[in-house]
Image 1 (tube, rainbow, N blue to C red):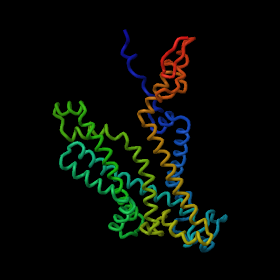
Image 2: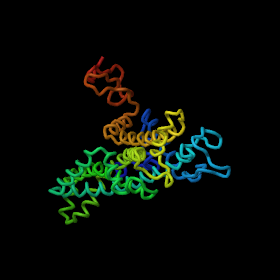
Image 3: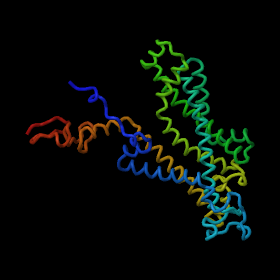
Image 4: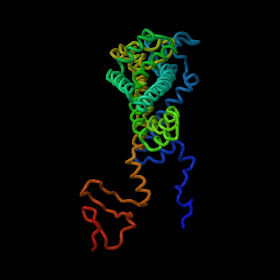
Length: 357
């Protein structure tokens, strides 16, 4: 007679329950390399954003030091490792401080869009009816607009296009939030429609649970599994939208905060004159940060694929598993028990049928 303890699955260790560590242990090969590269780039971006006041040699709006003005368009040197801009700002300091502005916009925009999108999607998917139809039409209409154009319109409506640090961060965040709400709405609504038909939801209704308790206690808890994946992908899109707003002149004032898109816009005339350093480093910062966050998001998306999880479980159960093909008529070089499960004189034909020699 088997005991109750033998029927229970082994409890995962604490290290396996930590999100990043768990995904790293799941990943293999090129996928692990992509995830590690993304985590390194994203971790470096967060580190720079947090410690920018300590790392940056000068302030983001500083034009002079004890020796006098920095000078305009000075090439890279010992005093200014990345040179200076046409306005006389230190490029290295502007790049480092720009990470802080970017992460502020990401945090505010994604948090606002998650709350609004999740709430609307939950209500729409659970109750349905005319409210669901209206919300779906509105979100589809918003989703049909070009994201940058919609962000420009919202930014102009909120702040007139230019503002100080917090007003600029808030206006850019709200502009990006409007773009992101339909994405969270679609995901949560689809999950809510599926989950509300499950047996445990019907049981809760029979027991007399209120709609609010069912929505937030049962439906919401089971419909937010994909939010971390959407968060990482939207974070990179938020940086691009912020840079786009700054590039076309609807960003933050340079004396209020450093912003990579604004610095790129001011460096356009420098490129034709052979002054490369004012555009290279802000553009490189945008590329590396977006690349890092995108690699993390795509890796997490692959690891969350149930088909890949199923293949990993089969591989672990079989022990040593040979390379197989899932295409009909493909090659099968190992039996159901792995290489060790093959008896002497046994093989499989092209259709996977055991053949005795």
